Length: 455
Image (tube, rainbow, N blue to C red; front, top):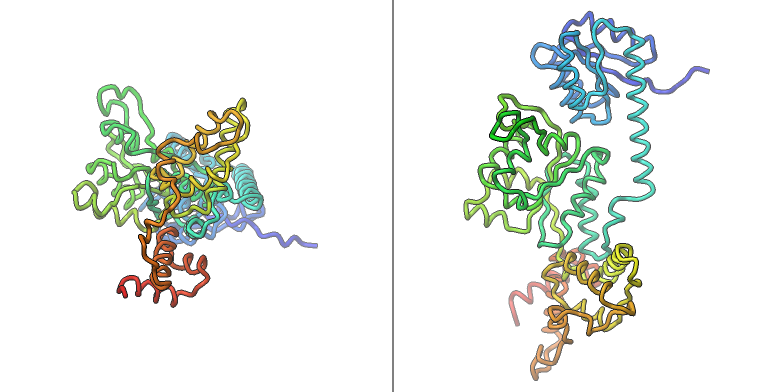
């Protein structure tokens, strides 16, 4: 019985169409569905369609070159391996193509068996990577490592899943300590780039004089002390994701270079006369208002619009208090692993109530540090109120009658106040608030209008 397995589709690109046809014919006789392409324009259209399993391209093609086709193929079909064909004199460029993501190169003249061998190996490795990634996703979603079952966090998880596989930039917004870096890693891990590098740079932590070289790299002799070439973080992240934390702190002059990279997908190392193509997804995060930074002339408006294609707002801890017990349990388990001499931490009900009443200006990071402190200080393993720092205890007094004075308030006023509080706690998410209160959006809007208008 004849096999019905789908043949791998291979694009063969050479500006000499007869050469492309010869190579394609040799591959067809060895079980490939190969297509010969004789022009750069036709190759670009075929690659953009992303319907190929592999690409075989000459390095020298009028109108473009094999390195450009390599970059376009990695963008359109990152799982499809690329093999370059070159004359002996072009070996240096062929080696460069491997550094940029090509699987292998063959020097002309070469045999069809040699090329078929490399293609089969490349396709087998690609299939194994896909299978391993699929298995990892089947066993556990990266978001399973992020604690949160509150309506506010469920909204974040839903948005992450919807935008993860896009190549568009994502801007992560939220107060300091809310976990923007954790969400950035989840975005990368949920994406088709999960097997590629995830590179992090804190724009506020690197001195301005070094940040440009860190991001874009430099060539030998670019400045005093540049004794060798250095690959920048953009190129290190090629094929994967670059996370620009604290983007609002980036110097304005560097913002122009970042904008150029976003528009062209090319970087120019310091001291270089040429640009290098890259395929990098940009994630950026800030706790500042970018519009305010723009008004202060500290941030470029055009860059903000480039970065804010998709945005995810990570809620502060005070808007996701339902997650408090789960967060404490996770941080307690982590602290116990780091401090094997300390018993697992147990939290009394009084302490949990105190934690729920605290405003958490440092958000999840503040809670994690507090749990670490309690793990180390509570010799019996049980945290009580006397173990809490004054910064937490001071906000932990139970509410008193002072909230209403000596008045008995009308139910309507109490209702309006409670709805407004619930909406603030859930980060302004109206659908989540409706779900939590058991009302529909029409009722919520009516109550909110009453609050705005007064009695």
